[in-house]
Image (tube, rainbow, N blue to C red; front, side, top):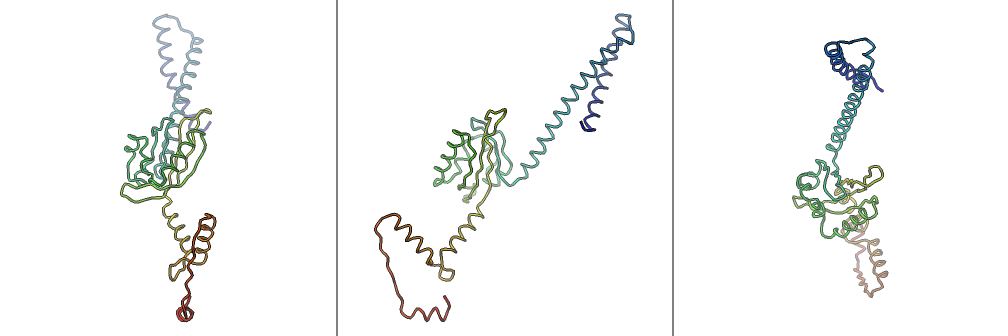
Length: 242
């Protein structure tokens, strides 16, 4: 027990004594006309027990409030859009980052538990629906990447991390964290383009052609290749570089 908690218990025990003892003494002096010091033992014990109990409740509520404030201080400043839903899909918590990531404030989500699904672009809806069924049927942790449409019309890539929350071994809801990974996806796309295209002409390079040929041959469908040879093109390469 830390020093602050001892001070709280002492304060509440003394307060209980100041309330209970005068009542007890008044009762024995003026009602029963009988008072001995040994009679103080019972009210002292009651004061200690009652004061300690009230002090414990006070400390417990104080610590819960402090932890809630700490949680909100961290969650409210985070760039990730976090939310918690009960088993029926109702939002019990939404971080302020909702408006930054989607363009919509918390009230829109609270009034429509399925609103987040409406933001998913049509091409990625099957992926989202599969994820929802997996989490709700098997209580499994799942992570996926998909696109949503921001309120301003922009298409954003989202990393969605979702898991079941338990209390005393029983599931009580779902915790989800959504992170904007649009810039990472753009960088990955640019790197892939550079790996498969000539930096000077921007045309597909040899690696790109071989990958395309591998794809075509694996499909086992007939296809044709057209080969063009330009006379004296070597002079251009020698003059201007490859």
